[in-house]
Image (cartoon, rainbow, N blue to C red; front, side, top):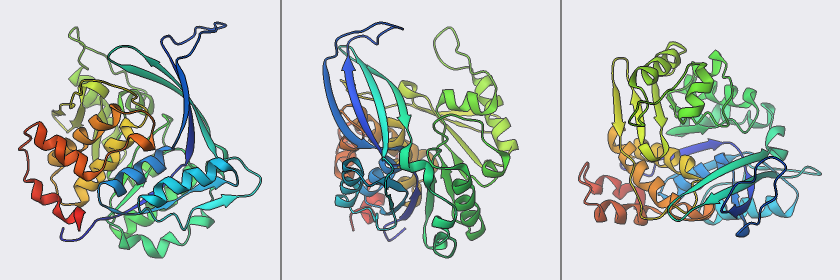
Length: 334
């Protein structure tokens, strides 16, 4: 591709309210925390921002409330060049909020998140109807599950009819209907979401790795519903492309320190979509996404942790990655 890819994101805006602690409290237990801070996020907004920081031309569609959180949630992607002119501001409704408890140790961090959707759940099909005629101008559509299902279904249907690939990040985990899955080009669940959405087990071997047979069974079930490509993210184990008869593993990129994994999946999905629309092969785009997400987990917060293209290219060079010619990314700097 000789121009910047155009990516449409329809999804959520969420202000993350983050408490860090050395130990997650048990039921009825109170513990002291280490720190508190707030950071703008939301799966849709995170993915849109990551795409923009990697050089894509990004349009974001969603809803925020008419509160201070809503103003902050729009300002961060706007500064990065994301077109938020279509985002709706709801009067008298709060913006989405994510309550994040982050358990930190010397070398790693684990999070538990409760999302209060707020304005995100008020988006209607009528309000995205303008996309029916515009969607063909995009190279990729990104969707998640923090806006109403009927909105996702409508947007995915218009994209499919226009020949535009759809990437669905099915989070938070839920039962998906077959109609939506039939419209999806790339499905990117994590291991828990993949198991939940199919009702199939995903067990581990004695060495701690996931069973290939379980991954293949899950992928087969999803492809039977019309999904063309199933890419399962595995946290510290990397990602897996589940084919008809085999599993292709893409290793994760390890950093010396893991500060906060909150936006790692969104960073990965955003980078994957940019890589694919910039002309990388699927395997190359997955490696690009792995390096991008590695930087993200080394930093605190959701949007604040998302790296720029220059930072990702620097890490690729530092790690002596030679899986593709980095000049293939030059169009993203245009």
